[in-house]
Length: 209
Image 1 (spheres, rainbow, N blue to C red):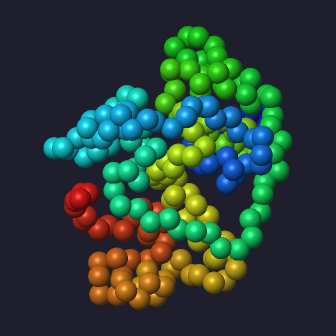
Image 2 (cartoon, helix red, strand yellow):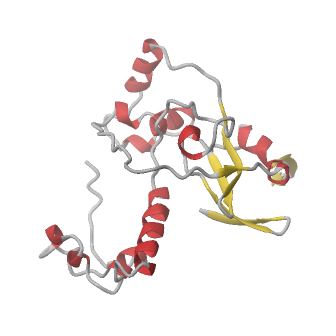
């Protein structure tokens, strides 16, 4: 997550890796117009998955494919939405797309930088006062389902903040007050605020399998 100021506007920029149809309106973000991988190429991608290391240690273009196709590597389950959808207004600002970025002494417009080989961003969305003012997916196709990684922390934190403002959640309470299954576990006695601050103090091993 990065906060940037552009010509007096304070914008929150996040590589959210969102599908355009789910976040922006029709005619919104720009995707790379590439058809799906043929079976032969897909099999080749699978052969390159590390057998003796964690899958995300792969670098280069292959890393992008893995991050966009994780459902082909691990069992996944779709979680469908419920309720109505609140669409954000799509009002692109040319000033953002044209904003000069200094890349190794060369000045590139922001949008051109994202599309260049100097960038590895899959997708970028900038929202200002409830409006989508910039949206671009230089290394994504509409049907792909990329992994969110730590961007999910931003959404979880925002939801908790809303519940706190509504008086439905007290961040000074321990986690087991809200998730009974965690009672008598190391996480159970940690406060919600500790979790939000990444300050649980727990000694967790990195057993990713």
